[in-house]
Image (cartoon, rainbow, N blue to C red; front, side):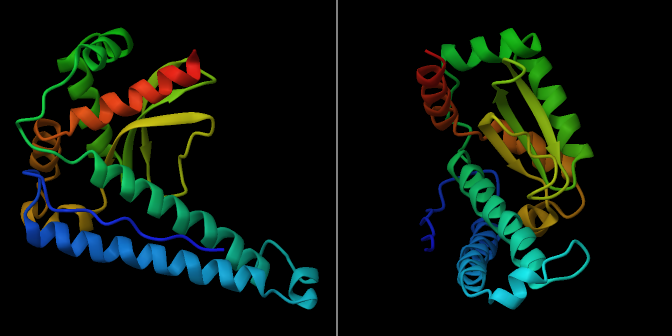
Length: 199
């Protein structure tokens, strides 16, 4: 078993093509490494399975590496999909979601930016089926801070590899430009799929 990477074209004003291409190369590496991990997992010997422990073991290595790599693949795909430009406009449905859960677009933007400045890895606007509301989650790593039973609507990569060539240490400018260049049509599409699940 394995996965194939998704091809993404450069269609955004948020980052330069040089930054985008470097980021895509990193994403491709996550896909490749996930497939390597899957092969290693399927080839664990009976001795290695029997020697599994929480400190150091082959079973632990592939188990924890698997979630890290696959989360990295998924989050990057969601991020690349929702990169757009200033021509992208929000739908009434998206505005309704932001108003209902955060008090309005400006309030959402302020909270999303704060989460980005605080996060070391990712910011994810997601609907939590448990909380029955949309929340902004800050993640410090691909597999840290993931809220289960949630559906991502908007994803921002806050690792330095996502913006450093263009923005250096100015994280605030990167987040501001991201919010000005969201592919809101993709967010609306995700919201529509979510609505179909909620019934």
